[in-house]
Image (cartoon, rainbow, N blue to C red; front, side, top):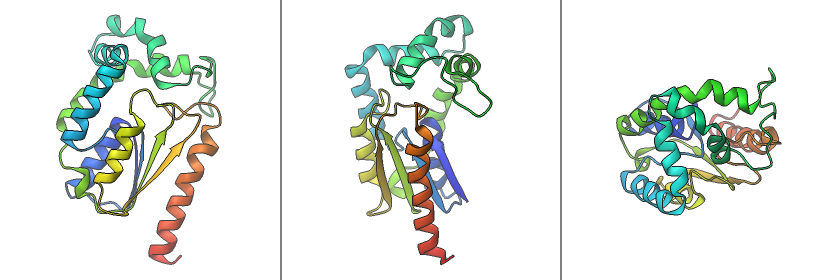
Length: 196
């Protein structure tokens, strides 16, 4: 069983494994760190470095379509590279960024609940873990991801920095830049551990 999580989803799967849940490997993309001290330092640093980003996300997590609707442009600014067009198709069904965020924006109120309900610490994770950091991420800073990898038991977490991607890992060429390291990681871990 391999768990893949992005951002707050990565926090949830870290918590699952750190508190005794079953799993064989983790793949974490732009992970919110499962460590109270690191999480606090990250949130404080984000607020100081980019207060408009922090304020916008705080507004977005309020359960109000009226408040959230005007922030679609700011979400695109925070989640994607400036060069990624809002009409870019992000999935096989041809959904555009605008369509995706119009659909997803109402689900952000659950993000705050995940932050407060996750338990454990990344140092308690004992399975192979691949951590992908987006080089242009405005929300999960590269320094935070590097610090998270250091919390894991020695040699358990592999860090890969993905160039030309922002927080959402959905900018142009994401398939090759994101899927290849995941495929290589899983092949290496399972071939080495299981011999097939």
